[in-house]
Image 1 (cartoon, one colour):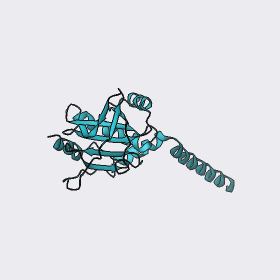
Image 2 (cartoon, helix red, strand yellow):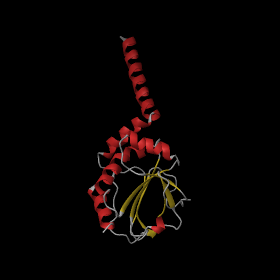
Image 3 (tube, one colour):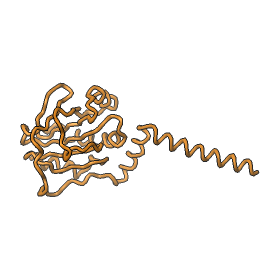
Image 4 (cartoon, rainbow, N blue to C red):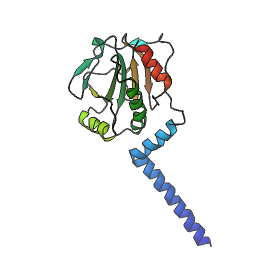
Length: 192
């Protein structure tokens, strides 16, 4: 009897260790867990209602598209930019990607709103392959200039929304659900 309790206890311990190891080692398992937590509403991005604290984006920031086109933000006043810094290996980045893609689909036909998925690893080919693999329609970019720490300090994911006047109206580091009415309303309000 005691041997069977000991055996059962060890089997349960081994299963728990294997599950924990699976979660820690495999990015896709972490992504699945984070996606599940996002569905609870704990990770909603809170869109600002006013822009009194918005600061101008520093001069000279530019990005290169997967096609080689360089976009200098200061030369595109009048446009709204949704910029997400991410990496293919980052579980929180992967977890929020479906919500960003869903938001993009709702506004992709608006000429004034530009989505930029900036690969923080500067590996555009891998990033484009990732987008294709998961059927995301999001445009891939890499930085073509130095990015100041106040814009992106290395925390992945980091998302910015820059208004048509060149001011950062929204900045969020860490995972969030962007497919919300609040975020859609914010983008549409800025694009008017």
